[in-house]
Length: 438
Image (cartoon, rainbow, N blue to C red):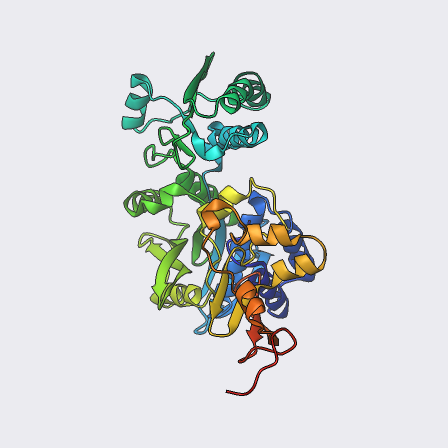
């Protein structure tokens, strides 16, 4: 799912059309964004980079280079006439995760637990760490967890896990454990009725494995080859954008990878790492884009200070994101629901004003959600863990207050708005006893 709100993406796309992007290119981007797959994160960052760079100069999108059959993603011309050719690329943990389907196995176990009537919070998944695996982990070697894959995963869950969960359901007060150990497969599922939260444990399979054997190097090296083939007579750089890569959190290792890439490549003038970070602003946390540039002083065309300073200023103009790239990458595997990226389950009450998700109310009025579903989503139903939570509308109704005004509080960088109800200052005789003035 998107890193930035879909409202933001559409605004950027429409603005790009006014800044020279061809309609066919914009249409292709829109179609990919609407697919919500891994490629959509690539196009999202490409669009974000176009929006950012267009704040400091003129940007041309995916055009050929004179005297070459190659294309570059963006060509930037800043105020003083300086130019830079830019390749935009993303990096994620997709390769690591494809080789280690722990998420798919965990999701299948949780799904079957719910079907069997076993609370998933009582279930834990553990992949044992043998001495051999731990030695490989310590040496920074590639880690492949002993998990079932593809059709084998479904078979193992059906034949080994489902019967175990049925036993748990038949004796909910007893702790149980099931170890699945077959050819190339070794994991343990535990049931503990006293456990409060679902958990899983395993060796990290996303450890850095040398300077040239990791997803960051692979992404940068691919784009560096593209720039070399283009034979650009000018400044050329790479914007490396975070699409859910854990290794990007290790700044020291990232710098080593970038410097190694630039060491013998005169065709690449700079590499910029674009990430999303948490910033505390007043009483809330904002997810802000940031950029860090590593210059190649040995490049045929070194990048100027004007361009690097401009890049920092450009990305500072971008609006806040709605989620971290790692969350966006992980959520690509989930089914997009009607309330995805809404303000649910949030609601606020202050004074005589009550705020609730406008999209949630629309769904109730459109018959897509029942009142019971609405209350459950907002943790206001009669489940034991929710008892005692205030539900202001009930109290106001019982006291005789009625709605005096309704308005929409727009959330520019979110994919939802607040619907604001304001109540009468005094009880309304339409719902309360007739009384004399105070």
